[in-house]
Image (cartoon, rainbow, N blue to C red; front, side, top):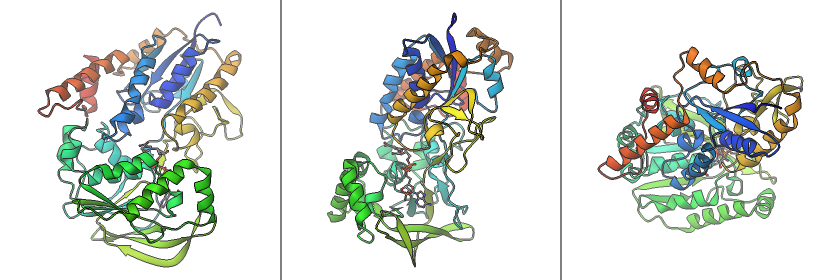
Length: 453
Ligand code: NAP
């Protein structure tokens, strides 16, 4: 090819940035990449998914910033695929489009009462405490909601439980925006009840995150003995994965530890499958679970026995779910764009020319941030193999895309704009009376204004 290959990556979270990095570093290809994101800021899930009290994970940003220093990679924020720009628009400017749009919604839980007042999706709560511009500024903490249920025993369930059980003061050292700090002061939760529908060997927590729960002086972790059982399938799972064994070791330690009398508690209950959120006057007043038993394979069956828990709020953390992408097929059961490991494929199984997927939109919302690297390598490998077959865009010069966005009156942000916003937020942190590292700006219009100043 006599010109540089032009690739758009939609989604500037870790999956997208890794894809851009891998492609631009490929010695057999001379490519430039434009990362396009609906958020005015880059880094997706790291900014708006990782909990604020996890600065170590947020450090991944440092590596992503080094990637973005590559002049062959540009950033266009505040441009929403589907609303502002469609696949046919992108095809005019790029040889190929890689979707790395992740999964940003809560998976539905179809049980009676799930829509009651006081029943929430974890993703919504995460967006709120991480200061995403598109969610309401106030969280609806009810003064009577002292006992709260969290459904699901993955790391998102842990994040939500920890944030609910910590005090606002404990979280003030983090980058939470002012409205989140003020909101958290209204959180009356004393007891968080986390429900696993299976046993301890089947939880999806990771050991470090589970251990960390006890690091807060305000939290006792109480593992309840009912359902703390292991069948043959559980023993196999523990033998097969060291990390699962470590998780069970931590749970066993919690089980044997006397509560210290901390003001807040996180309870972990096993073999309780949520079947109904109980309500009164439209508000959550309880949770009904069916007690389950392990069936020998590590799965469970219902026992037909039910238990009602007096709780006043429910957070479902049963997994994320991707948005449908305009103009692309969608596998609703898996919540992904159908693909063969990299190419997006049509309903008849044929690859859609020039369209690729990577990250959670490709393989579903599982795995840690680092896993998206190998995923991106696979996708980009397929793209590179296809280069000779890609259809050339009508406008291959990079400036054509900027001109197009301008002509549409779209107020996009750039990498330089992000650097300005980044400096602004760090400045807010420094100026804060408690000298915080960063204070996030929340309203979209403020972010865009600062970035485009
Ligand atoms: P996850 O790890 O898949 O956990 C989902 C949990 O929901 C599982 O315990 C699952 O139980 C349960 N569940 C699903 N359907 C249910 C139902 N109908 N009733 C009751 N429980 C149900 O998902 P996640 O917590 O959203 O995390 C997504 C990914 O992000 C994971 O890879 C996670 O490790 C990662 N993450 C990492 C961090 C971190 O490193 N600190 C933080 C957040 C997220 P079953 O197993 O029985 O299906």
